[in-house]
Image (tube, rainbow, N blue to C red):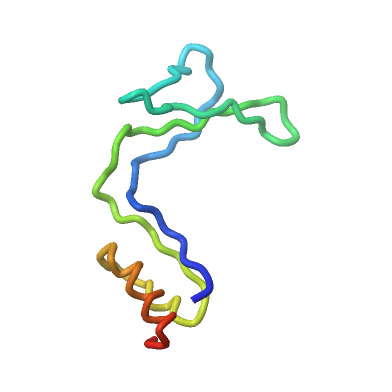
Amino acid sequence: MRLVVTADHETGGLAVEEADDTDESGTGPGDLPQEDGPFTIRGSDKEFYVDWTTGGHTGVDAPVTATGPPAGRFTGKHPNTYVHDVPEQALAGRR
């Protein structure tokens, strides 16, 4: 196993918005940052913000990507403990 990338949970939708002074609210639920930015668009004088459309965790599956010999074992749906099991078995020589 060379590399495994995943998240511990899914947080919800992500929106890219125009920079609009009337819509930049600053904080979301529980004082979480609701919007990040402004970010500039390369080669342009325009800016944008990134905004979360939810303030908490969701029940949506988190993606897993991997490289290396047993990476193919990460296709499909698996319980979160599986993300630990595959590298552990690869390191122990039990592919």
